[in-house]
Amino acid sequence: MRISSISLLSAASLLPSLAAALTFDCAHITKDTYKYNLSPLKGAHSIYHAEIVDGSIVNTTYVLNVCNILGGSATRVHLHCGTSRNICGFHYKYDSDGQHETSFAFPIAGLDHMGHGAKDPEVTRLKTIDAETEGLRVKLSGGEYPVGDKKVKSAAAVVDFVCDPDRSGLEGLNDSAKRLLRAREEAEDGDENSGDGDGEGDDGNGEDKGPFYDGSNPDRSLQFKSFNQTDDESYVLNLSWRTRYACDSYSEGRENSSGHWGFFTWFIIIFFLCAAAYLVFGSWLNYNRYGARGWDLLPHGDTVRDVPYLFQDWLRRVVNTFQGAGSRGGYSAV
Ligand SMILES: *[C@@H]1O[C@H](CO)[C@@H](O)[C@H](O)[C@H]1NC(C)=O
Ligand SMILES: *[C@@H]1O[C@H](CO)[C@@H](O)[C@H](O)[C@H]1NC(C)=O
Ligand SMILES: *[C@@H]1O[C@H](CO)[C@@H](O)[C@H](O)[C@H]1NC(C)=O
Ligand SMILES: *[C@@H]1O[C@H](CO)[C@@H](O)[C@H](O)[C@H]1NC(C)=O
Image (tube, rainbow, N blue to C red):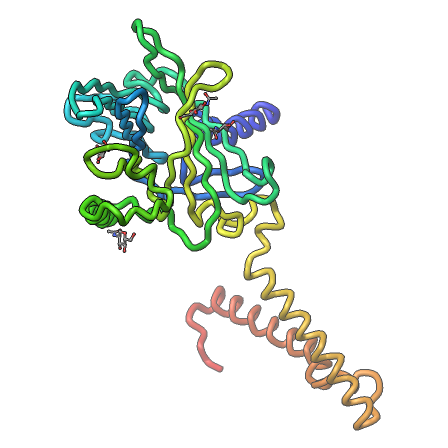
């Protein structure tokens, strides 16, 4: 009886972590006794990366929502990648003269619409990889990348959430920021010689339509790192995301018991220290000034001495009140 209830209890306590392991709950990430809440980064965000491959422009837009499924954001015009996914890529390829578009969408992480597949979330603290870097590495799987002949390779995403106390993580991701960037791009397009090359791709490599822009923006908190095949032939999208929500100091308290030494505990400790200091100092004062001994040493010694009697008195009154109320009903005379 007892054993079964205990095992039931432990099974119940395991359930949330099991569910978290299967679905990745961005608001309750627990790793090495630290708790993180990445929910401020929720919502679908998109960035793109363009590069020139064999004279063609390959422009891939990555859409991600680490906290939820993509829903409607998994569809771009005629490309659908699956509303139940968390991270998708939209691949566009153009000739150098902008002709002949080939395009396809592919899931990078998340379950398919039937809930099949495995997201296999893996969370690692960056400090365990590199002691200098604070943050979280989150790996989400479940995607697939087409490699021709109707064959696919599995795909996954590795997002390094790097601690940056000065950033929410949404910098450069909202629409007004995007509009600002577009305006800046247009201004740069107009002025051929302005390219100071601050990480904005290789400007002016013989393109006749102004400098080629690869989509990077150093001011943005979310950065594309790479999309590449790994040793085991699966494809991995590497992203880095600077945000204060990945900081250990921002983590919502340690999980172990010492983490629950809240304000109240400290308050009580400090109260007792103050009381002790008061008693010691008061006794010392009484000793020195009045040559007090014994009970008289204590500050308010007479009051303290009276405490047992006062308490007795109070107790008697309480008992009387109850007895009076019990036997005589509304006894109120004093
Ligand atoms: C790549 O795609 C994005 C979004 O569709 C677009 O804004 C950008 O201009 C494209 N870049 C290139 C070099 O084609
Ligand atoms: C968008 O981002 C800019 C700067 O990155 C910020 O000033 C603005 O408040 C943001 N707007 C919203 C709606 O978050
Ligand atoms: C990754 O991609 C880059 C270009 O995007 C390429 O130069 C590099 O060789 C690739 N690395 C691997 C391991 O395939
Ligand atoms: C992408 O992230 C994984 C982390 O698991 C790492 O092994 C790999 O080297 C990274 N690739 C690049 C190009 O940084």
